[in-house]
View 1: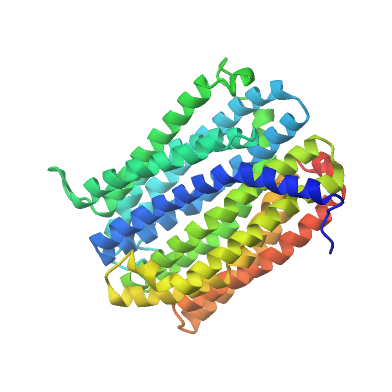
View 2: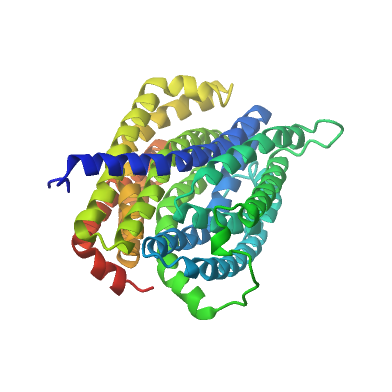
Length: 459
């Protein structure tokens, strides 16, 4: 397969444009990953059981959260296509309808998490982990409506090629969470020691601070003044919301297919006791932090591909935008894999002083190094397909890769044959490899005629 480079200078320009667009996204996503890092470090120093509880609680929080997060990903390609076509007057009404969708999804998720605490025992979570996991969920659920609204605002800004707020607010949240989480987890300044529950409450407060800051920014900045985002109150327009759902819901299911593979893996490992659960939490937190880099590049690629479609640049322009992101992803994944391969022991030492947990977590990071390349390829391919609004078939391909291959293999090796966490991680690798092949092939096929894909996809 040849790269779509008719003009090397034009391709280099596309790579630079993607890199500039992606840099704040990557930094913002890394700051989000560092929030998980802060949670894990605070929990790990509080105790192995606390770390295990946060592992299970985080898994149960993010498993349903994948649906609204992915569903709202319909906004960046929609906004970028409208901007590329010069139809800026349609962006404000679309944004206001997406806020209704985000608010509704947030309320549904709040109700779900309120009930999830009663599922810990039926799921077989180890008894020593359940109280802390339940406290974490009860605390963080209050931040769910804020998070869905935040994603809506962030995706609007990203679709308009303005990604700096993602970076600034991401680090702002980190700076708030670190001292607040420390105070509530360990009980400082006369407050009670709340352990995992304190981390959940601190996270919820941080999420509300982020969305309020983003609202103030969008309302007052001159950059978006012409879009009149908050100029009037719009009632729900169900046709517009259905259009967003038609494109976004398959994205949400696809994101859940991948994220769910990791999350259900964490829940299954939680059945094995606090040491395996704590070790897995460390390894998956590090792997998630690495994933934030290609994820940010994939989001930038979504915007660039959508912009190429809106400008009518055809198959060549669309593929050039996607391959520019691919070059950057391959470079970052090589770097991430090398860091995990040669620095795994030093990384784990930041999380825990428990030698047994550290040894198991260190070995799991070697598996994380092995899936850096397929993980980067699959997320980049999925991002390029979102730019084409090609979301339904990728959803089915993701289901096949993650749940037809990855989960059965991981559960069979980890639980059936008794390989424990290592067997589960082999399943993760297999699922990501298959997904990278299927989604990459799908993009090459869909991008043959970008105009047809944009018109026929169910928007």
